[in-house]
Image 1: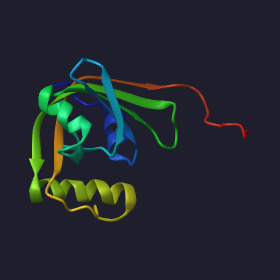
Image 2 (image 1 turned 180 degrees about the vertical axis):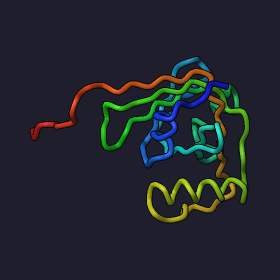
Image 3 (image 1 turned 30 degrees about the vertical axis):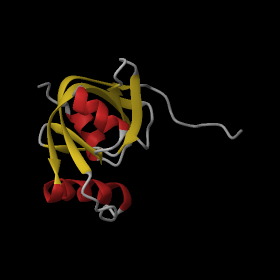
Image 4 (image 1 turned 90 degrees about the horizontal axis):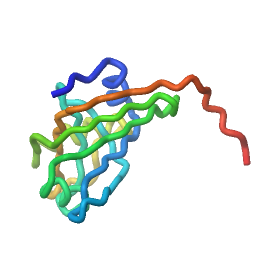
Length: 139
């Protein structure tokens, strides 16, 4: 397992959106935005068992995650790794509610039995802080 440097941990601890890339059956990538967090040294995110990413991870647990600082989009990190554990039921909802609270200030409203939490073991981690100031021009 690759250790997460402090600057990468900070990105996952804050309410920053990440993109998870999984592999389709034919090897092509599938990427989707997710809420993320940390449980110990594992990156976590959740979905519904019927989602494309869940079906992909059931078949092949390898994935890549990119995350961008909401306040400074030139501060980014990338994690390559694999799902090493899942949680369902109340055990999953405890973490899902914490993630939802981080992003929305409220517990996750959808309480269906299909929620699944993924624990990702980081195997390769990198980050970058570019020397730009985010000042998009009005179009």
